[in-house]
Every structure is written in C-alpha cells, then in structure tokens.
Image (cartoon, rainbow, N blue to C red; front, side):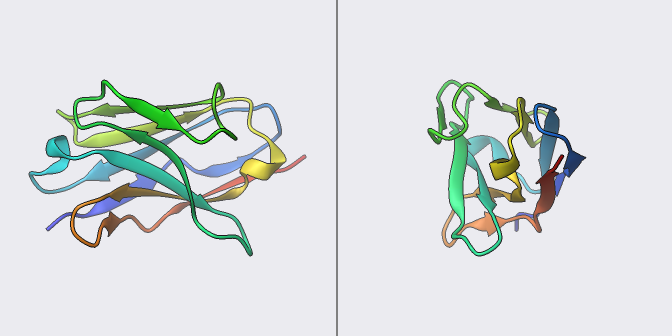
Length: 115
C-alpha cells in the first residue's frame, strides 16, 4: 500500500516561488516514475511534470517549462516541485501521483497566486 502526502502550498504573489513536497510511504517509491498534476477550478486535471524512477529523465508541460523543476530523493521517498516565477494561471490544487495500477494520489495542496 502506498500513501502520498503533499505539502508546501500557499498564497503567493506573481513572480514569487514555492516548493511543493510529496512524501510517500511503502517500499515501491524508488521503482516508479512520479508525476505532479494540477487542477484549476472548472478545468480538467493536467499533467505538470514527471520524473523517472532514477531521476535522470524529466518532462514538463509547455506552460511550466523553464519555471518549474521536478526532483526526487529516493532515500527520503519524496518528490519535489520547485515553482519559480509563479503566474496567476498557476493557481490550482497540485497533486502527486505514482502510476502503479489505477494510480496512487495524494490529497492535494492548494497553490494560489494572487496580487
């Protein structure tokens, strides 16, 4: 069984930064790609970033390329999302995902970018 717990969300102004964390339980974390998704009000959940099991391959949505960085620490069973130069349109609930079977999801963490 895997549990994912996100943290690090908050209210920031445009141009500021946040770092999200997703801590996993269980023993399979280091064997799987990890993903960050987000869902804004009234919109579908979208894939923001993914990182391979060893961390060597990272992919990003075009909307966040150059601003967000995904990373992981397999010894801590944690995946991170460093978000810089935040924009109003980055406002959403952010979820981490471990895509095994039907997928494991955290409860989400709210990121609000507002002036």
